[in-house]
Image 1 (cartoon, one colour):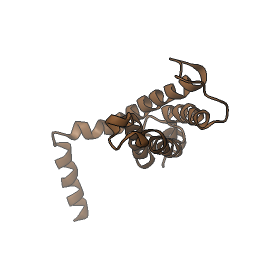
Image 2 (image 1 turned 90 degrees about the horizontal axis):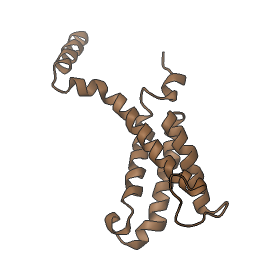
Image 3 (image 1 turned 90 degrees about the vertical axis):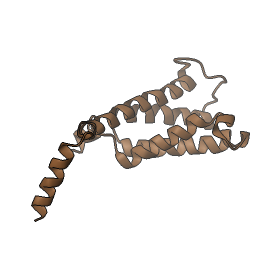
Length: 147
């Protein structure tokens, strides 16, 4: 009886108008991970190397901004490659939460007014990756392949 219910459920979902979207969803997750990783990497490269644009102020070695840049470079690379995605995303989500509450929230309650909307968005996108993983197009999927 369970087999019949499962088969009926599978054929109903296969004929669903969203079946194609369901099939490609894991790959879209991987694309989101790659784009978010590359965008986050830019922040670290800006702090350390002035690329693609210089950071507005000097970043003293071993300062809070220096460590933020280090997390952004290492985490951005790991997330882009999909290697240790969940761990990297956890650290990066934490960085964004700390950054928001230390630097943006004192400027007002609303993220649009305190210029913290990107920090909030990054925080929750990275938190999603902690639970969702890196997707099928990741080194994690290749290395930790389930049998």
